[in-house]
Length: 344
Image 1 (cartoon, rainbow, N blue to C red):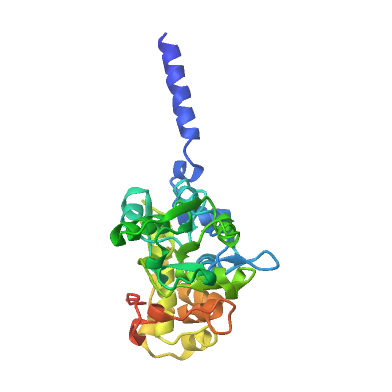
Image 2 (cartoon, rainbow, N blue to C red):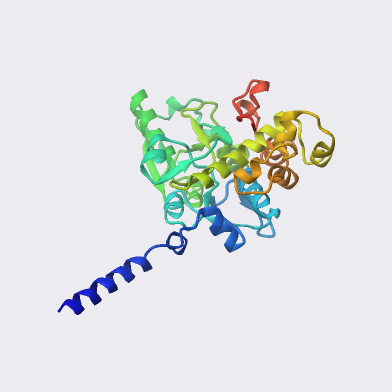
């Protein structure tokens, strides 16, 4: 009987171990796992113009995917060693929690409940956004409060859905919320006339309007009803990985402030006497080693995707197909909110 009990206990222990991810069994950090795999797995959107969208060749491009490219460049010195997993708003957090992805680099708002109760951590704001509305011009609506009684399309599992309810409650407005599981379904429903308005982050709405069959028939209301700080997320309990992702975002911002660009970074390494630049680029410091990287980690990043401003201009500038004013996403030195701690 004793032998049988020992066998049963051993069997249960083996079953429990088999349910633990391999990297957890081996005690591997996220960075160790990525290095062993040879690539980083990034959670991305279902397709948000300017932020993350597949091009004609199926390659993911955008402001959010630049973060993944920067991470791949910092770790492997190869921005293409990043693969992308397209996730809906409903399943994006689960994919991160379960270890299916290494980092969630898509438009996901930083909020209290997400940051403390779901096993994930927000790293750094790479885009300050706000929620808005798009309507058909023929409705004659110019203000959100004029949508009292209107049906509004919204994606499930988003802060957008919650903000809509809060706004209605605060302003004593009744909305008929029509929720859909995916972004594609939500936009398709709005275009098909299943609802009077569509609401999401303003940055996303600008790109969506351009993709509608008759964009000139739709109006983007000039009101913002929420704060939507966006940026990459990681799992909790891996401080080293959290630090690395956060400082990759900060390096992009610091590079712009210090005037380090994709075109001049090599020259800056050789000639700059600015101590801040020299520390950022690893000339006078070993901060890269502290992050588990080589000391030229920031050089790799900047050579791959440019600095924060270059990435922004590439995806949202006047020459892009998704023009967005820089607005509050200007550097703090230019009256904006973008600010990164010093590399020191």
